Amino acid sequence: MHALIVLAHPEPHSFNAQLKDTAVETFKAQGHTVEVSDLYAEDFQPAEGPRHFARRARPERFGAQTEQRHAHDTGTTAADVAAEIAKLERADFVLFQYPIWWFGMPAMLKGWIDRVFTFGGVYTAKQRYENGKFLGKRAMLSVTAGAPEPSYSYNGRSGELALLLWPMHKSLVYVGFQVLPPFLSAGIQDGIKYDRPVDERHRIDAYKKGLAERLGRLDALAPLPFNMLADFDDTGRLKPGAPGYSPFIRAEP
Ligand SMILES: Cc1cc2nc3c(=O)[nH]c(=O)nc-3n(C[C@H](O)[C@H](O)[C@H](O)COP(=O)(O)O)c2cc1C
Image (cartoon, rainbow, N blue to C red; front, side, top):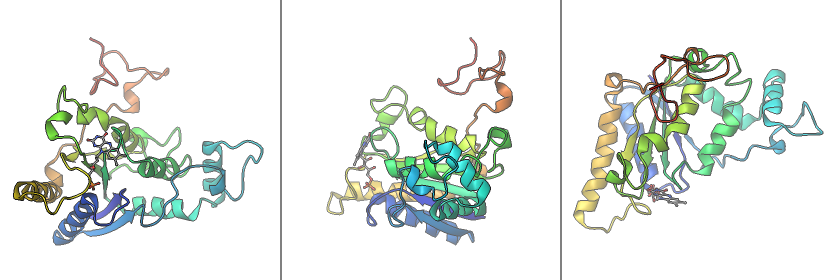
């Protein structure tokens, strides 16, 4: 297996960076190959906009999808984006490692998706969901949070994790990935406090062990269920009788 780890954290010594190291070591120990997209270290520019398109399809009015498609068709996709797409194409498994910031992902990672999942290059109206470009590949989120673990469970104060992560999961499904259940490391406040009491250190080590253990048994994990295009009618609504898998898209009662 060839794995790609996409890391979105600005600090090389952060807990997130350490979980990335854990993942790299785990993959290598299993005989897999692995590469890392360390977005801050690469100084990835996450804000989609005109500056990334040297030869514009429509110079008078910027439209991201129009320019992404044109860049793809003319072979002028920005080098940084093309490199990320190539990494995704090489990977059988993609791990996203990031902290929960404001109930979502850091802007760096959102921007990476905005720029890298290009119209034309990664998806089209015909190439998505069950016809997606990355069909046959699996992805998984490993997220960290400051709030305690119970607050991410059903009726928890932070909001249920599966719901908070839905937009990211949905984006991955949209481009054809199978998405495995997420891994949460919670109750981590502002980096690893090396000088904290011993039980804190143990908790952090336990999360690292937990991630390694999880990555060691990927084949045993069932992908999260999502509706595919075939479940929707021509107007984009769920067909009667089709299953619903989340409060975002509910089966008819
Ligand atoms: C801008 C920002 C927003 C945050 N928002 C949340 C949040 O919504 N929920 C939460 O549980 N923690 C939140 N946190 C805490 C981080 O998730 C936590 O510090 C991080 O996961 C710890 O990992 P690290 O040491 O690798 O940064 C936030 C932190 C920052 C800097």
